[in-house]
Image (cartoon, rainbow, N blue to C red; front, top):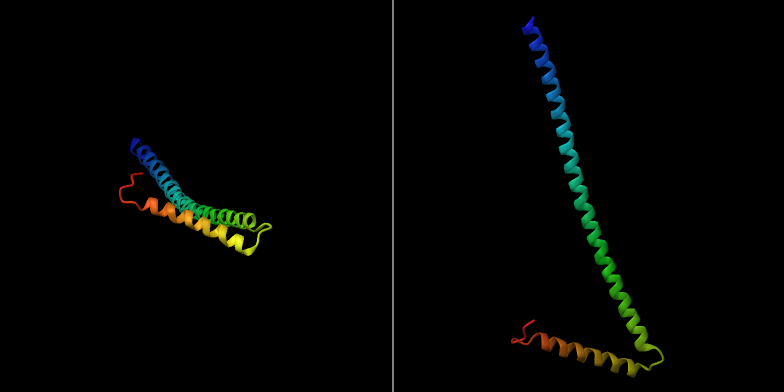
Length: 102
């Protein structure tokens, strides 16, 4: 009789272990799916951040263009742009100095 009870308890224990294994496999699949979803969402977020940065840059260019061209002649705008380019060139020259320590 004791042997039958031990056998029944062993069967119950085996069934519970099998159930736990199935649950664990399901959870592992869920984790893998969530990790893939997370990677996809991070990628989409980075793309949207890049697009937003591009839009902001284009807006700044548009605003600068508008402020440069308001009520001015073509020659004045060209002179203003040339001044900005010269200033940028000076900044680049300073940055490219070999003894410059940032």
